[in-house]
Length: 444
Image (cartoon, rainbow, N blue to C red; front, side, top):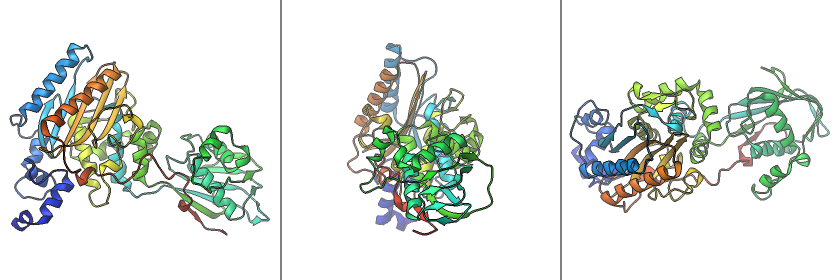
């Protein structure tokens, strides 16, 4: 173990953890990762099994000042939750272990459970089969689409499928378009509605103007598909006949989660939660993976819609950290799953959060929430969660941003971005409709 401390590996390990070698919480970060026997006390500190005096009194004073200003401006109502920690060492606890409506911080749990179940590279498959032969450009039978749970099967994906069908020589389906399995299109889960949208997408000659506008933004050289369906759209639970024509693989899960979190997309979150087995399964997997107490996370859906979804600020931090641990060996970081201040727009477009912070926002009628990680000079990577109860959204968001800016002023700006929050995925350019995710099995 002494060799580890004296080697360059120590610096790399700490940087991946989000701290510099001079950070005061270095040992506890290693303990959090199980790297130093006898220092598991850090976990006891983080989850309240040992009570200690607050180790960062200036930060605690900043929190008091922040809450006083909110109260003086009549911006808050009820409990306000704040939890701040460096590595596994708690720095500030203001109602940090109390259940509160988490709004879209719920998507942190959905992201974690998804990663635990499928892994960041997982791709949902949508399969297309034919119940008859292909002759002179006509599929003499039905075209059967079997959904595999892809929550981002949208216009671009269907256009890619249409072009793949054209590539294998299909221009017309003499039979019906049959929808089976867990197929959704443009967030529509009703099989007849989803199938009708798919049918429209396959035939470029019948597109409405909004689809034409979207198509114009796809990769140069993308063709307009020409596949007409003579019959009707039919929903069936299962179709056993037919031969497989092609598989359409979704974006990797990490990119789907990035889109979900950057735009706080409730539909994607709920579809993923449904695919996982429901809100209680998400809750169970998230608390287990993060090691947070079960009583600090209560979910009724995967999106965060409704005050019934509740969590403690401490649980929000714990789940964000667990996502970072999950991604350690993948070449990805939490910055590849969540919006990054100064880089991604979406829910951060008009915020003034410190640059390079990785965060998740949350909004309900009476809740404004924010959780994530900010890089600092003196404390390394600092994890935080803020749950404000109030109705003046703009003012509460502005005060949250100022609060984080003051923390960074206290601890200093990190001179080097930690590897643990270095982004690799560009959330502004998802490769929807990419031709290389269609596996053509017939002709072509």
